[in-house]
Length: 371
Image (cartoon, rainbow, N blue to C red):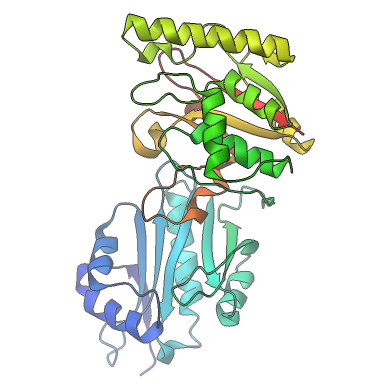
């Protein structure tokens, strides 16, 4: 009897079959039974299987595709895909991936990303046939130290294919140096004399810190970052929609408020002496897009609420802007996360408008940098 394949969502009853398929398909980087169970029920996962529903197959899982979604991002990531050797020729990988893409589009996602071993020509050919485009290389990505190609597809056909530029990424090493890390990435993209080390990160933070923020160490003041950029040989224009002290609404102590005001005034005085342009206006996305197209770099303050629901001010580098999305490099890598998921994160323009505001002040600020 010929094989009849059904594409459906993975179920808890599939764990044993999926685990057997995993072990038969991979030598390294294999999913455990525990992780398979987790991803089947995880709200941020799309787990599709292809089953043989012929009399002989009796519902056996012959292939699967696992896609992971990140909160606040419009991109999904193909985490793993596998097919039983006996099912070759039935295009199960292609059918599963297309089904996963459709499910991701239903969730409002715009892009699918994946990694594939550089020597896995069979898989690369499949992805290229389905319009995935290479946009980078991840060195020693797999457990066996093999390199991985980074590929992406615009899964919602309404949106044009996007060119993603090469852009350095740096992971902040403390909870309070996102501004420094964002400035470092932008400086490196401009080919300025910026060394991507912790020493540089801390030097920038010391120059730019606002002293106090919501709690703990101070974060980076936009004008302070502009002054730090100047010391690194860059020119910076500051866009900020308020003329009074930023971040002060998150501080209750009168003493701390006075210090924040004093630091803000110092930054304003120093920026005037240094000839730094301050634009007391909301950053306009089209202006930022024009700046990037002119070869300038942009870093922006956002609220992390859409990522972690914590409403923390956070600096990111904007790497590209097109008609539908802004793309950001996020320096704040969560533990056990993959750095590639924090690079060129696509944010829909309409989503970014709400993300790029912070606090009761509705603070909006960014820096436009040039060498």
